[in-house]
Length: 368
Image (cartoon, rainbow, N blue to C red; front, side, top):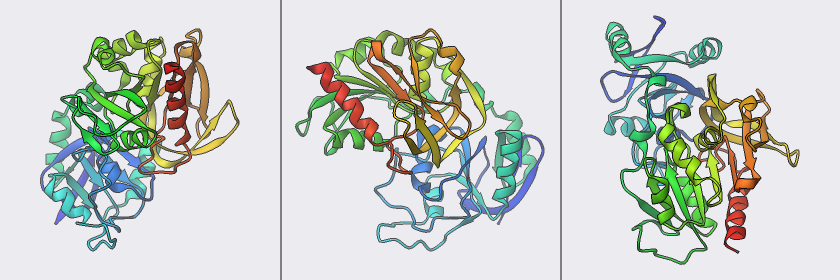
């Protein structure tokens, strides 16, 4: 069955149907990772976006029950060159088409993903629609709220507190196993693998809604506070920024991706939108303290303005070697630090996992 991708500038791409039927709109972005489509589909940072995967054959190893990063499909749509109908992997329980269909996600395949990627790189991200009739798609775009005008964090955050320990999810007040540290996570669009990595490091995480107050966060007597990744424009999240500002200096704090941007806003910094964002598993980042370069997994459309950090007490510690954007900061006097990429990967390289250990050491020092 024919299906179309239409963009807000009037461009039409012809393809074939994949996943559920219907029409969907969103900001069209691309991810350059060769693997990890299941994790990408369940990453809350893609809320409100139609994701194009640049690798040409998607779905080879199917879908399994272990690699979900949240409880639902997060992008509004998916674009691939070719979807594999018959996956081959001992863990696979279904194909990518079956997952998209059962979760109601509209997708498209068999179109020129290289041409679309080149267009986005040249012109920047844009609103688009996947549809069975082009005029229907253009009408949907005209009726849709622009991506930059929405607050996605409040729709992806947890609705109620929960805990995550060595055995996975557990009741907040009933730890199932011993742990070294009590970590409180402000959930702005959390990926499960972040919690898994901290559990391996001996931490029990208490995950709270992004709307939680500073008093609520501190009521759980944390040894440290984590600001999670998440979708959308950080400058729109003034209530969350205010909470972070109140918490600064009270306990060791670590921010990941959106968490980095929220921390920078809390101390007076500013952010700006990138032309086409950083989304993939091969972004080189240099640590200015050690000179070491790591290959990182990234997913964000905004970056921190380095000039806005002058006089805030923050030191820029890491830079992106592709475009020189800020990838990490430290605020020694407040025991706070953050990075712009995803140390938990999922998908991606494991180069950045030591940063989990660094934060655990900071929590240990705070307790002693």
